[in-house]
Structure formats: structure tokens, C-alpha cells
Length: 133
Image (cartoon, rainbow, N blue to C red):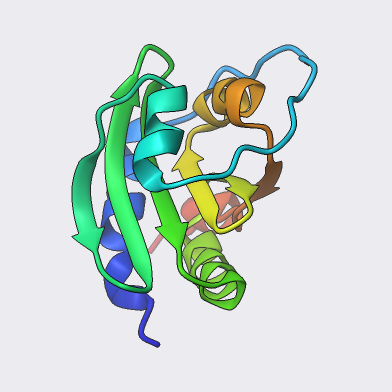
């Protein structure tokens, strides 16, 4: 499965998101399940579909917490492969069973307060930004 072609929307949101403000610690609810539309409804966003395929459904969402990518997957393996490839671009990932939300840390923490899930952090490339030619 070629997952690299499915990443541009996630990369675009990360580029637009910038650094988040971080948040306080809240109680985390049980991890949500369901379709992309039902997850989007829980966090009060109308999904702008980017990919609607058998293996992945991916949309850009915006709500009062900010902009993020929401994706659902047909299989756990497909989800893990997508996350592993996407994490090379940095960012923050809220991971549930067969779904992921990608955004800055503040958005991901706010979404976690509604959707539950686990936060994973992408590769930090800040050390590479100091190179001068």
C-alpha cells in the first residue's frame, strides 16, 4: 500500500498550524470509535474530504480549537503504516482505534479531551534547521 501519496493534507495542516500553546491536564475520556463523520461530529467540525478510498478516509477539519486532519482506516496495520510515515514530518498525532487526528499540540490536546486516545509526537527536525551554507 502506498501511503506517501495520502500525506499532503496532513503535512499542509502541520505547516499551517505552527507551534501550539500546550494545555493543562484534563481527564481523558474513553477512546471514541466510529466513522469519520461521527468522530467529526463529536468534535463539532464539518469534514472537508480529501481522500475517500477503501483503505483510508481523510478530511481537513476546523473547529473552535483550530485546524486538523482527521483520518480513518480500514485496518490497524494501514493506520500504523500511515502514522509511521507521517511522523517523519513532525507534528502531533491523536491516535484511536483505526483513526488519527493530526494538528498542533494545543489542538490535539483539546481533541483528546473529547475523543480520548493516545498522543504520539513526530520527529523533531529543529536540530536540522540551524544549518547554514
